Amino acid sequence: MDPEMIRINITLPASVAEELNQYSGTRKRSKFIAEAITMRIRQLEAKKMEALLTEGYQATKNEGLEITKEFETADLENWDEY
Image 1 (cartoon, rainbow, N blue to C red):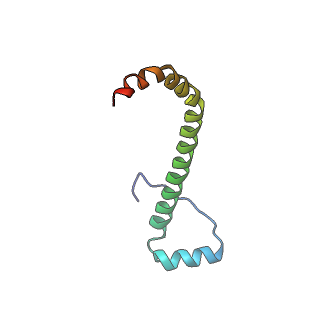
Image 2 (cartoon, rainbow, N blue to C red):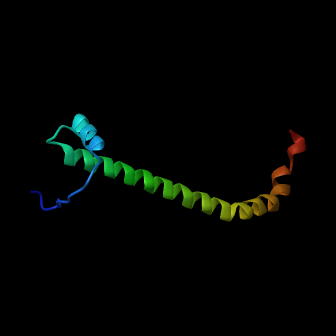
């Protein structure tokens, strides 16, 4: 066995185990389960990152509005020439 690998025992509902065997074959279950777990972890990490970004954007939105207001006169300067 690969030294990077560890052996664990899991319990699954019979129906899930049957579906697992249908899609992975009995000799490739470990690989299938590892890929499924990795995919789910990536989804959870992406969801967590999205929540952190949303929180950050909400926290700084007023700051952005204040900066926009501060430069509003400079933005409108010379527009009547066009």
